[in-house]
Image 1: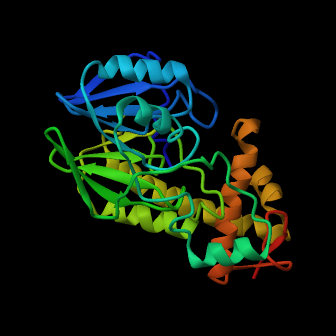
Image 2 (image 1 turned 180 degrees about the horizontal axis):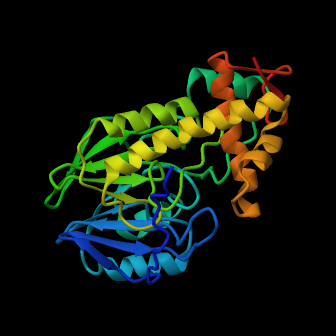
Amino acid sequence: MSDPFDRSHKPVIGKPLDLAPALQVVTAPNASPMTFTGTQTYLLGTDAVAVIDPGPDNDAHLDALLAAIGQRPVSHILITHSHTDHSPLSRKLAERTEAPILAFGTAHEARSPLMERLAAAGDLGGREGTDEDFHYDRKIEHGQVVSGDGWELEAIHTPGHLSNHLCFGWNSTGAVFSGDHVMGWATTLVSPPDGDLRAFMNSLDRLADREDRIYYPGHGAPISDPLKMVRHQINHRKSRESQIIDALASGDATPSELAAVIYTDVDPRLLPAAARNVFAHLIDLNERGFVTSDGDIWQGCRFARK
């Protein structure tokens, strides 16, 4: 498959950038191999603003957001999901602005029955970067519309990366704030038990059924052809599944062993995350009867092709 990803993003950290009428973005100073150029915090509105994903607990980023907001009131703080690069600053921002925090729920609010069962039975690892202290003031459900100063957002529940993940459809403009579910610089980490590959694929299908014009992701530049990117990522996951099954033809293996064989062209620092993605695929393949495990499923067990 051709590479559709845009890795040319070079934001000025801490400085607001106008993306569209009534929309600005401020990039947090938390660039890393997992966060790319940093978390994208969006400011939506004119006379009053909503803040989407305040970002990590970083005082410099808080100062940058408050400077960009200026004297305008903050009406809403909206959270796509409760990872430590997206939600922790919501607490300080809420204290400073008295704005309510809106989210789908806790990190495992919508964890699937399969993941609940597996997590109870063995060590699945995971929970990388989960904001354990996250709390919210108002729960928003799939399909619920939140409105503010000249805007309306539709909540789109997109579990998979995290079970409480939401995208927000700014439907009047054809835009979606896609969080970490679909990004334009790389594919998304799916790490069980709060990451769930089957849920992730269903969420991609949910977005593929829409006719959106542009995505504003949690990291990286806007995605100008979102349907093409969604379809690419669906095909990518199917291709990865085939690679895993093919690799198991040589014998049983752990997720880490398979990742080392399959991910030959990635930064070595990303191999642990790659192993988590492989593990998510193996759980799904096991559930569908394509592979078996050497006992209870846990992060270090061996899998074999049926």
